[in-house]
Figure 1 (spheres, rainbow, N blue to C red):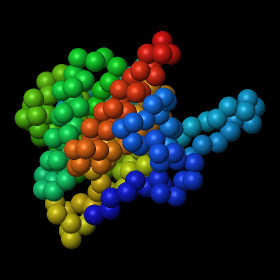
Figure 2: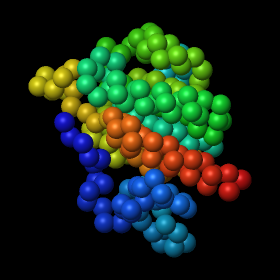
Figure 3: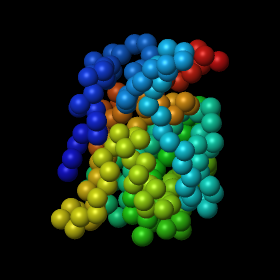
Length: 211
């Protein structure tokens, strides 16, 4: 199984030292940057426009997260390996920030054939998720797979050699209200997720300082 985020190892401007739990100040912006020739402003990598359907048959798109930060991941319900570990840590995050209106969670299934809306609903209920703070989404397979590079996550591949039939990663991605990737963690590692939650707190403090 691949265990690195696409592009991260090759981008010289990424501040690796910013991934420690002792980090202070603004989080970095991950992804390719460019300069606006008209203003000289830095234009950061952004998540593209998207539209999917969640466990309650509701449309989930960029507007769903307007003004909020969110945590994204990619999974499938029948995954026998990393997904249960990742969802355990996502549930930790959900419970910790359940009453915080500044943060939401977004889980994309990569098995759109089997992870129907009723199955996603049952899965969410099994985790004790009964509100709109954590959206489990499905949609057109090609559109879900196409958006994974925006999150700098490995594009899933159907492959019978892998447990459950999919080669995929278990990263958690922190996205700010401007659709910028600001932090990431291996969702199977509890200590990394502890550090990740510290980074979530830093981002929320940053957002508060701008309001």
